[in-house]
Length: 173
Length: 82
Image 1 (tube, each protein chain N blue to C red):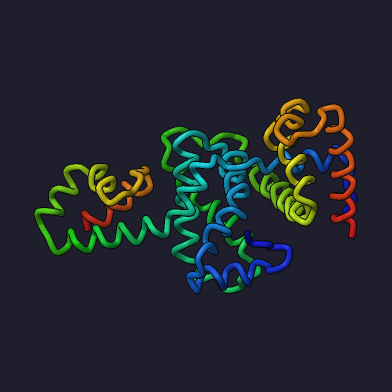
Image 2 (cartoon, chains in turn cyan, red):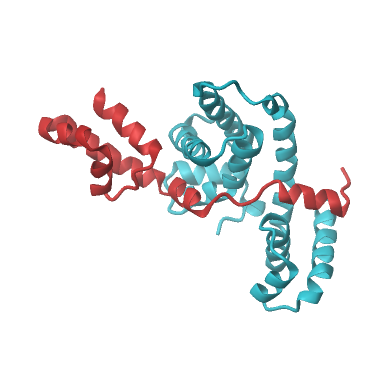
């Protein structure tokens, strides 16, 4: 599995461009949540529109990766490609764009911050990543998390709290 | 910037996983692109194949082992019609 905390974006881009097996999978894994969030939260696309936009973004990334001037700037570059794809889709619809699109810049700023938190989360133990992701991103109950991870449900809240404290330490460091 | 637990929770929640099928399809895109390139090249050399593809784009993609997503269908339609 690609360890971005160690290797960095430039290395990931280099591996993709050299056709290294698994590199493209790593890139998609790393940015899939970010693109999905811009498409669905920033531009309020849903259903087949959202899926088509998501696929279109990654096709464009694949096609144009060699044109990326600064490999360390891949995240803002992907954000820009996603914006263009979503705006094209919104413009193609017969209906006027939703009023929420006026706040898309603020939403993407928030998602950038969320991405930084996610990177810090990736530096925590696997157990912490799992429990925080299940609770906050997958909306799983303490009971479900406890069953899935084989730990007492009564200890989940304290684990979440401990893991959040570790995450805060990572971000404050 | 310093975060409290509530704010950290909000930010983690902002990036839920994309649907697994979407991620898998995006990961398979390079292979799909290569298969599509091959199909288009064969169609350019074979008018009858090109006609059959245009008649049923979905079947043509499926026959190549490709999931006929709307993005791939649109790309095949565009490239085969050029």
